[in-house]
Image (tube, rainbow, N blue to C red; front, side, top):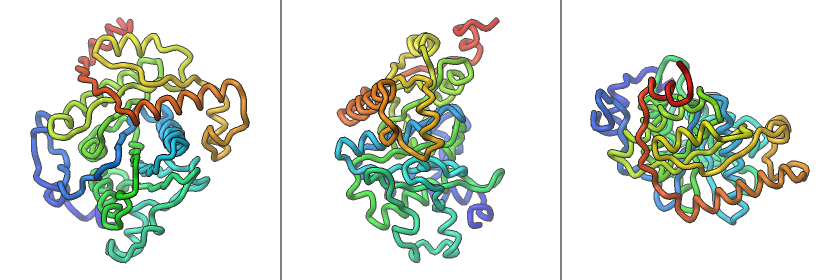
Length: 306
């Protein structure tokens, strides 16, 4: 595959100049100015692996669609299951389809890599390089390039990047170069908050050169938020939404469904209303947050570890 044979230094040249201005020692992929997404509101969803980012992203996409917005969700994970509940199937990735045409992108049609999902949400799975090789930033860049070449971003109101786990290397931090706001999904526990702190660092680094800003924290799979609230108060973050640990949410994934397609119940109705409230707030403009991340040792001290 192409990305396994191209040196990382060449990928950086192809994506723009290498720079250290994103942070001390940084060699992150730079955004090609011609690949800016345009007028759509762009959100990047980050968080610890397994925390429910794809479920959160898909239901947020569904909520925006119920507001009448034209939505595009881009999964940025080699596992390529971000859009599973929207499309009811595993989609081929952009890298998969590029490989079928020997990376001659001009031979592709939009329907080769963009697929309709629930309530008109358009779905793309960027995929990723093989384990231990290539660059996630290259994959994201190629995906945005294809979407622009086929004019698929011109009629889009909202773009949601659902990004791999808590990997905040230059490659998988690449969606931050396109986003207006970054949202962090976390549970009310130490490991999730520790990962969130690292993501806050990555967003701060990208904010030096790009428009991305923190848009808030989404508490997921959590009955309470006391630990999240303690951390947020310490660094200057705010809770944007709170979704409890409901069995109906777990079952929605097994049923290949968004929450908006599940059988009605009072608990589920409350969750759907929270998603609609979050989508409306984000559309109106999430207040940017200038959070200052903590040192690792300070997080242990704050959350009660000796």
